[in-house]
Image (tube, rainbow, N blue to C red; front, side, top):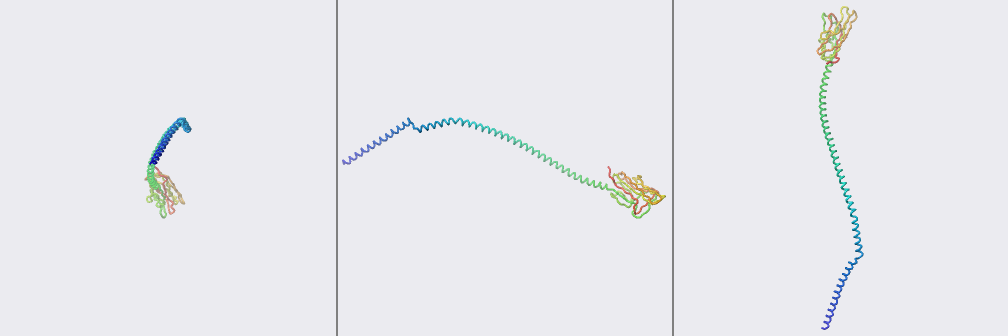
Amino acid sequence: MKGWLCTLLLLESFVFVVQQQVDGGLAENEISQQLSNEDRRQNPPQTDSLRDEASTDSQQYCHLSFPDIHAALRELTATVTEQKAHIRALETQLREDLNKKTDALETRLTDAEKTAEQQTVILEELNKKTDEISNLTESQVEELRKENRDREIAFSASLMESGSGHIGPFTTDITLTYRNVFTNIGNAYNPITGIFTAPLKAAYMFTFSVYDHANPSTPSTVSIMKNGEKVVMAHGHQAQYVVNSSNGVVLILEVGDVVYVRLWSGRRIHDNLNNHNTFSGYLLFPLK
C-alpha cells in the first residue's frame, strides 16, 4: 500500500515538473517572439530597405513619366481631332463633288432624253415626209408618165395606100388625105381627114414633100395650113422629067389647133408605091 502511495506521489511530482517546463517554454517562446518583433521594428532587414528603395525609385520614375505620357496623349488627341476634321472635310468635299457629278449626269441624261425625244419627233416627221414624198413621187411619176405619153406625138404618112396615079387638078383648093400611115404615135393625126390636131400646147415640127411628072401646063403646088391659114408652100414646075419640092416649118400650137396640107386649085401631084408625097410632124417640146 505504501508502495502504491509512493508511486502516485512520484507521478504527480513528475507531471507538475513537466507542466512547469511546458508553461515556461511557452512563455519563453512568447518573449522571444516579442523580442524578435521589436528588433525588426527597430532594425528592419536589408531586403525591406531595398524593396522600399525600389518602390521609391518606381514612384519617382512614374512621377517623372506621367507628364510625358500626358503630353503624348494630348498630342495624339490633337492629331486624331485634326485627322477627324480633315476626314470630315474630305467627306464633305467628296459628297459635294458626287452631288455635282450626279447633277451633271442627271442634266446630261435629261438633255439626252430630250435629244432622243427630239430625234424621235424628227424621225417621225421624216417618215411622214418620206411617205408624202413617196406618194407625191408616185403621183408625179404617174403624171410624168402621162405627160410623156402626151409628149409622145409623132406621125408620118404618104398619099396612096396602093397603086399609083395623079391627084388634081381641081377647081378649088382641097385638103390632101395621106392615107398610107407609117407612124401615128399619140394618134394626133387623122388619116381619114388628113388633119393633125394638137393635143397640148407645144412646139411642133412639120415637113411635107411634092412630086409630079413634068407637065408644061400644070405646076405642082401645096401648102401647110394652120387653122385655115396658109403658112408655107412647096412648088414645082418644069416641062420635062419630074417635079420635086419640099418644105418644113416649126409651129407653136395651142390645144385643139389643126394643121393640114392643101393642094392648090388647078394644080396636080403624082404618087405611087414609092411614096413620093409625104406629110410628117412631131412634138418638139411642150409649152406652159
